[in-house]
Length: 383
Image (tube, rainbow, N blue to C red; front, top):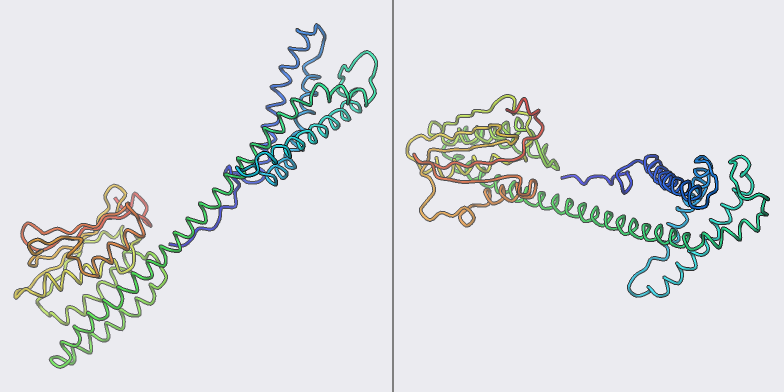
């Protein structure tokens, strides 16, 4: 389960140019709203005359100045964040900052209007006021709204900063969980491989004095199996094709041991051979079917292996016609290492999006059914 790289996009899932465009659009919308309000208030309440273009010019210069100041407000606001222990002191700091930014905003706005008012055709009075007079008038009329605007931007900055930290913390937790899952899978695989190796060596030991040639063949196939195991190292998933190759190699060892007492049948659709499965997910189940279902029989037995795609899920079924489960058998308590390991690996990889069931067949034997998400195969191929 590889850890995903951190997303390079910002808090809103946009690229940096996209974020700037969104902020520019937001300030423009505010300017449009204020321009409509100013236009109607000036022309109907004050019985004056102002064209909509003039009202829009006034609003745009006001809000674009706030847009230019917003990054600086964000930096200062997040530098002096408010918490339970410092809220009195920090509120005073932000009040002073609000006054400071308000004065800066008024100064910039007055400067722009004083120098480009003829271009905008803004009626600022019958006589042209000085910059000082304009600045003084705007400071008295706009300082309180500017204080409220600063506070809105500051508290929005607090929210964005908190959300950014929360998202970073969630990413760190997710990465830690992924690393923990990788370590758990590695541990489970480390448990499974010696378990499989010891069982196979026991089978070879049983033949080495009775049939040395058969034992030699088993050792050669065991070497192939170990080589395949090394190829699967550090891979959370493999293909069903590779997993079946591993199972077939394992079955060749068991054919040497059981000779005519063991038969196998497989029904695997070709379209599903590229489906993703956890490595060594089938071998422990096939091994259990042989050890507990076929080995105790005096007559030949068969292990069946089926795969199917059902509603976007991969269904793997391993069935034997052996003696079945003993009386009072409980899946959680009576399962050996291979079964427990398989169940735990499925849970670690897929969470609740998987199932692992063991049941006795009506006509004898045991059926193990594994379902997991169908991945690596196009939907039209897997149905």
